Amino acid sequence: MKAIGPYLYERGENDIKYVRRRIPAALRLAYPNKTHITRSLGTSDRREAKARSHAELARIDAEFAQARERLDLSRASLAAKRISTLSDGQL
Image (cartoon, rainbow, N blue to C red; front, top):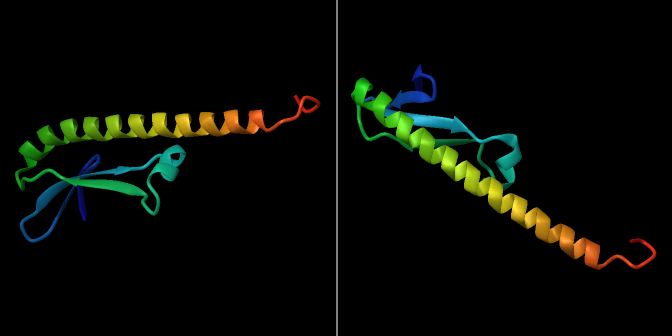
């Protein structure tokens, strides 16, 4: 992959443009065995790729927000289970 801008890369013999975003450390549990998200922009034109990259980055950010909510909910449900197993003396 050849970097051509922030989050923007090209690869292949047709120089198809891709957006690549690192998964934040706090969300790695939601994406096992992955460190980055890479999405094709479906074009080899640099101007069109820059325009499309903004929309794709917004989609990835929305996906990260959903994953963050899911992780927060799963942690909250585990905390409730732990509290319910405590004895009166421990509370």
